[in-house]
Amino acid sequence: MEGKRLLVTGGAGFIGSNLANDLAADNEVIAVDDCYLGTPENLSEEVEFVEASVLDEDLPTDVDAVVHLAALSSRAMLEEHPRQGSRVNVEGFVNVVEQAMADGCEAFAYASTSSIYDDDLPSTEDEEVVANTGYEASMLARERYGEYYDTFYDDLSVAGLRFFSVYQGYGGNEGHKGEFANTVSQWAEKVAEGESPVLWGDGEQTRDFTHVDDVVRAIEAILDARLSGVYNVGTGRNFSFNELVAMLNDALGTDVDPVYEPIPLKHYNHQQRSDPSKLREATGWEPRIDFEDGIGRVCEPYLD
Image (cartoon, rainbow, N blue to C red; front, top):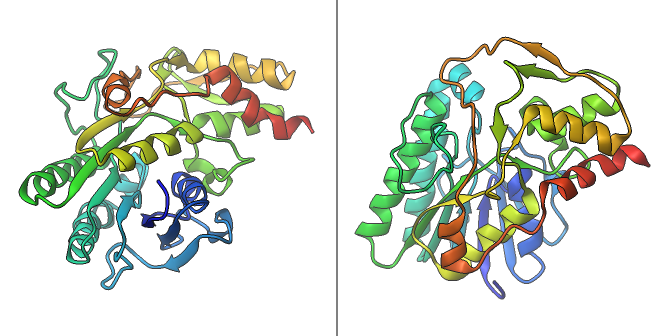
């Protein structure tokens, strides 16, 4: 994508800042963020930063395309703040779409989640999904609203992205997230400091870990193609938490054993692996960073 004017909400956050910085090389990019989970320090000088909430009026939506990533983006956040989570994740979605349409925007992409899938692998976009948590309910509400806007309004394309375990490491733009960062990043920090990561259950649960650079490329491919519907953004490979700890030890040259504790959550997702073929067939996108290389990138700052 080149020569466009683009808005990224949640643009000072982890995924948002990586996307905004990349797009700004060839486009005019505005990053909107309320700084609850993001920091403008993540952004390059080429990105215009606007501190605002997605619930505000008069957002800078006079753009060619919007990438709506702003959200209370974890199960814990919605359990602690259910009303605020619903307002931001659902009402904020509608608010941004409505303003974007009024300003003539033609393409809208937004963050959904892979946590709505069950343990039957691989996960495909056409399978039945269920909201077992408030967070999942809010993301599914986004998808239903996205479907409505895409089918009801002929001049707007709306695409949802079901992200799978996106990571980068504290050496990148994920550092500010702390306890809300991906387990790869949290545990790399712990293992590097000789501290045992806590694994729930037997540690054999799996995740499809996807590097943020590949996620950025996926979002840009969806915008370029003006896609509609929902798409998995994952690698199609999964690794257990036990394997993750072993890989971190290998990359860091450490020998730190994890600690195992009972799973404290109801409706816990035990297995994840995406089927990314829908996105691949629509755009040609393929993940380029395998997990072994990604682990090396996360651990590199600790080896200096």
